[in-house]
Amino acid sequence: MWLAVAEARLRSGEISLASQAANQAAKLAPANPVVSRGRAMFDRRLLAHQINQSRALLDARQEKRAETSLREALRTHPKEPELHRLLGLALYAQGRNEPAIDSFLTAIDLAPEEETLYAGLETLLPQDNRRQAIESRVRPYTARHAESPLGWYLLALATGDQSQLERALQTDPTFWPAAFALHKYAAPARAVELLQQVIIQNPAYAPAHYAIAGLYLKQGDREKAVAARKRHHELINASR
Image (cartoon, rainbow, N blue to C red):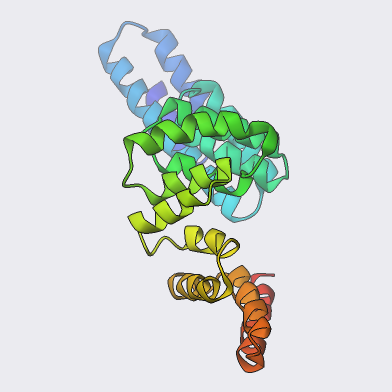
């Protein structure tokens, strides 16, 4: 009955009361295999609920509430990498970069083969005081997964080696983040080509329109420069 109460509380979103009911069930029958299986199923559903709730809070830009929810979830699931990844996002959204990096690295250490866990590091690179820690995770992953453009891209951001950006594009010519990063090092003509590819792959990426406008202006093509700058303003205004 206490397990049934726990499930009902969980469906109602009453997380704390649901956990208390599940704990009471386990306390009353610690050796009962039916209760043990029921508790394990409840814990899986609870974890899924907490992850979905935290994602919804992050989407709604309620980072502080998301952080509170995630820290509560981590008390019962300290080795769940997705919780650490989401906590990293919540901390980053609050401008707390150092603890955000720690959360992302913890997630990676818990599941080093999960590529999505590495993606969160992109916005935090380069971080001079943490490059070594980040590189120590990214380099082995890239060695194991040479087919991953994300690995080469993150390695480039961590080390400053632009040849790794070329490697990322060789691996996947449609991987636009590497193309955008590489345009800063390229000659003007190639920089324009790289930015055009970025815009094809991600037409709503405002920084690419801004960057290509400047290059068009240097080339003397004022009409294209004005059009690109106008598109940049439209995208910026739409995001506010």
